[in-house]
Length: 262
Length: 305
Image (cartoon, rainbow over all chains, first blue to last red; front, side, top):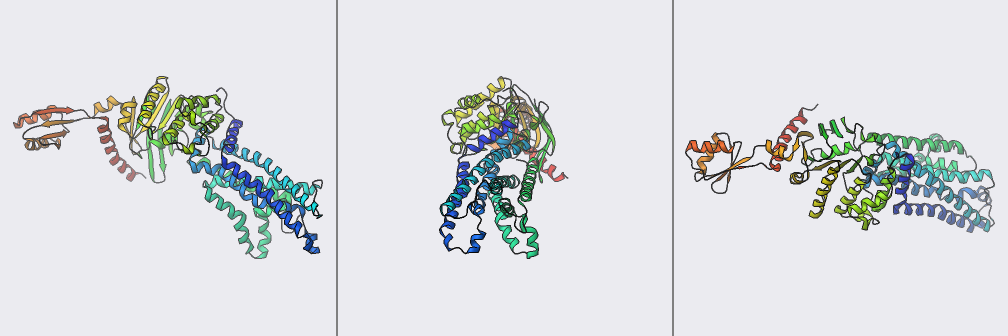
């Protein structure tokens, strides 16, 4: 009991908390199952009806995006996990014990962000690479066009899929910091990813051209597309915009936390 | 030294703590006494930095809680025994706290052993009874071997054996030179477990002192028995006593000393068969003190800007 604790100690403490509840492993299993499971399912479906596809369909076929489509389902699993990393503490009251041990709230948020960032960056990359590789193996087995990681744009797309999931975990966490209740946080998160795109869909098309590309899910699509399509950002810009969203949401949550009573 | 320095905490319209100003000394058990909702928990929450004071502050050796480098090694607090993640085991709960404050992990097993929950250390705390959670909370408070200990209503949920254990435990902590600050709304509990008492009501300081100080300053009642109780009641009423009939011909008189009651009876020519001064219990003192504070508190809130 000699030296003062540092950010390393609080981060280790948060990591211990992260891995000592069963909900973490249920969440991770869901996330892995959605990403890899859907890659298997969708690539198998495409493979089985390949012979019925028209020539134009075949030309438009994207072996990378189709193998990574599970990412757009897994984003809900990781967002919920990010949110719950803070909201579950408010739900149980454990936040008060946590803050008694780590009264500097910026330190606490930073520690939690580091835990999520490291855990989900590593896991997401592993999971999306497995999804990609399995998908390509299935395409190859059916003699469909497939992609290779030796193609740098393909490699980039796969890496960015992992980055996208990591950032969405942190967005979920940031919303949890702001809203504090699990159910409300998940509602807002789902609204952001699913409902707002539907609403935007009803806007006049001239408006849509300027707005849709800013939606998180479309930023994700831009990030993991090998080519840039019209009315969307290039992958680099899309990544920067999503990083800005994440930073702003977490900064807002941290500011609120330092001002509010626990 | 734990110091509450002109502390005020307002939640919206409600004034929970109103200019509290006192010190809690080491080496004794200090009771923090007040009815439910009098601001005890709020004060404790401000001490450990959970709530921000509206004005004033609470300091530990001159520092606010969030200025402490390793807070659990200076202040141990048990505010709400159920404030933990129900799906984590008792040991992992304490390990996380220890880690965040650089407390060696062997200390976790020591405190678990000490409070008697070592046998269920690997069980999820969600399944713990309130008594077991209290014990785990005490383990958490002791984890960093702190010089200052805060307990908010610690006897809640404990069985009689546990209550006795905790009283002895507070005494031994104080004997070791630590500051022990224990809140309760139960007079009787404070009377036996605290050396020094601070009484608050409606967020305001009322009084402080030892149990003896508090009861000595209060006027008790006088029990008087007479065959002519009805007339005696009139006479004593005229002498500004407050009379309450007890049984057939007894009267409980407050506001007069036993001498005054005896003299008044003699002057009126009434034979008195029994005349006993009754010492005020801490409970009586508390009731009268906080009753005043309730009215006072009301007035205060109305005139507050």
